[in-house]
Picture (cartoon, rainbow, N blue to C red):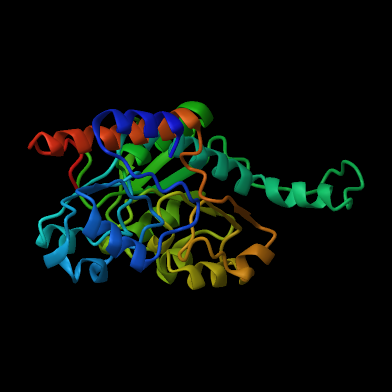
Length: 309
């Protein structure tokens, strides 16, 4: 945790701070659930259904997740044994949308491929047809998931690059924030878009939401960007679509089995890969921590946490 978050949390609670960067394991999680009233977990903490099987002996009654995605937490299983779960939605919106825009540009303009050539000493100088990519200005972006982050990406694309916006959302969006057209399926969005961006929350309901059908529906010159959660995408089908030229490229900040990244993805020159950097700015991480703390304080006072999942 950022030090400011640790310090602020210690003003309200008796804190044990796990200062390792490695992920916890199931034994550590069980011990924490047995030992503490509340836990501030991150996406690397395995809090699936198995973690709550010994709930009769658990002391923990609150999980204030550090992040928006809760696909690492079985919220229903936690709630069933009396544990409240919260997240940090508002703190990450703009930072994640910024990374989404960066991945759109890098994937469309083949920036990673160009940098790799230069770093390897293989660049022979400017050429008229070298690394020709997709000019995104005036093109169509298709957004899957028009929540806070989806809307923020739409604003950047339309107001900054003059892009048309089409989107799919499971419910009707009355105000997408920009001029945009809601379509009735993900495949319809994929068929119209030059860039497809996934911005849905990570949860059991969205596991492998993106399958082969979406890549088949995409245009061959289009690029695919994922800034949501890795397991929203059926990763092998994405790899196949890239290898077979169904789509032109991809920009990824998340992976299905983090921190594992398939070797096949690493080898593909037409893929931009980032190490889950969507919220990697100090002020954003501080904001996430303070939001998690607000949820902890509300719970401690017997109130409903403002960001209860």
